[in-house]
Length: 227
Ligand code: ADP
Ligand code: ADP
Image (cartoon, rainbow, N blue to C red):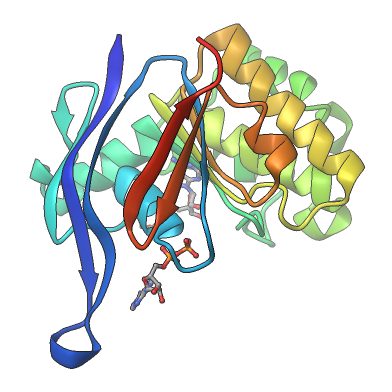
């Protein structure tokens, strides 16, 4: 079942002589439960693509359809709500809020929506992420791998349609990188969480179901490894 469809996506930053075409007429679709790795040289448009898929960065032209919603057809208020509920974003440097505890960081997307965490679900997420003993810690009291696990919890708390990760292991040692990838794969395989991950690490890309290569804002290769 198709969950994401991207049609003729282009993104131009700036105007006139200094304009940069970061995405050049990109089209593809992703099935529910698919794990897609995006690779490509620095500056090729990977982060721009991820942010555009995530409702964060409005494209210059083209369309993003996520579960039958035309993402950029939404007005800004609806888009903010849609993003919070349907998109889980994971960054290289975690983007946690330093003054909030682990539990507060994870449940923030719910609180912003005026909802409360389901205690059972929260407990399960914390235990899966190995954070049960860290509930009341602040981000700076945690290792990099633990902080990234918190950010995975925050991304998952709303059961998003799509999980997007931009170099999630880029700041971690190899042991923590391995743990993070195993967790992402577990959520992907066990809960059919659709997952798109930007990575420089070939070992990570090879774990995906599909590898898309972006060069100069275009898809130059789209390879299915497993179904
Ligand atoms: P990647 O993630 O593959 O390194 P990016 O998507 O970050 O590539 O960038 C693609 C191109 O768009 C680059 O040339 C970059 O300099 C440019 N770019 C990215 N963000 C902006 C921005 N906010 N303003 C202007 N140019 C940008
Ligand atoms: P803003 O009010 O600046 O638009 P948001 O309300 O979108 O910010 O989000 C506030 C915080 O919650 C941010 O730190 C953001 O990283 C986090 N957050 C919101 N939605 C998500 C999500 N879908 N996945 C991960 N983190 C999220």
